[in-house]
Length: 259
Ligand code: ZN
Image 1 (cartoon, rainbow, N blue to C red):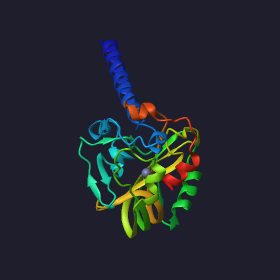
Image 2 (image 1 turned 30 degrees about the vertical axis):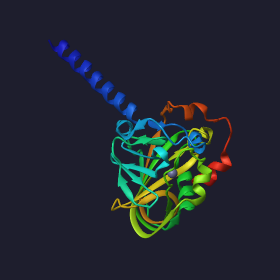
Image 3 (image 1 turned 90 degrees about the vertical axis):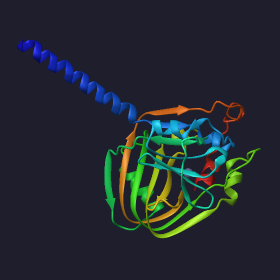
Image 4 (image 1 turned 45 degrees about the vertical axis):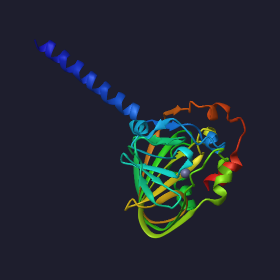
């Protein structure tokens, strides 16, 4: 009887442990719709709905079909920052041509109580990341002395390439604002698939405004970092994606589009 009971406990523990690690493993993964190179080429329509996207992550950044603004997702809520700089909640039926999401579970957290700009922040983060060969998600929450963001206006067909769209992108400035930055760091070797280095979007604490981050000055922030070693991609199933020429390297163009 004693042995049977012991065996039962062992089997139960194994099942429980396996179940837990399996779940964690599946959630600690980046899901991305399409590629940054396709977005650069003007593939602004995809077939992933926000309803589907929410099943793949509760946190992330991206855009919308017809390139209708910047997306930021936090704690399962997704926002659309349109070309008026204002944030709107995203209906489940909307679709995305490019988005990057994960279930955010930080491996590390730190506080920064000194003032630094975005470039200094990136250099500081560079010293913290344990390797340049995996993906990281960042959540940066707190007080910002200054923020400059941009959004992109909704496009109509035939779609121009992204480099043309951002030539007259609307930009927005905020002073002494509380908010949250969500973003990712991708390795250089993933150029073409995603944006190498840091890519951040912001939403203000009142969830009314935000955008793609261009400049910042932080004052008092908490930074959380999620280390991620798995990537799942869903490529668009449409003729625009099938026919896009994704063979060219576009390092310079990407710099202009994202910075
Ligand atoms: Zn962006």
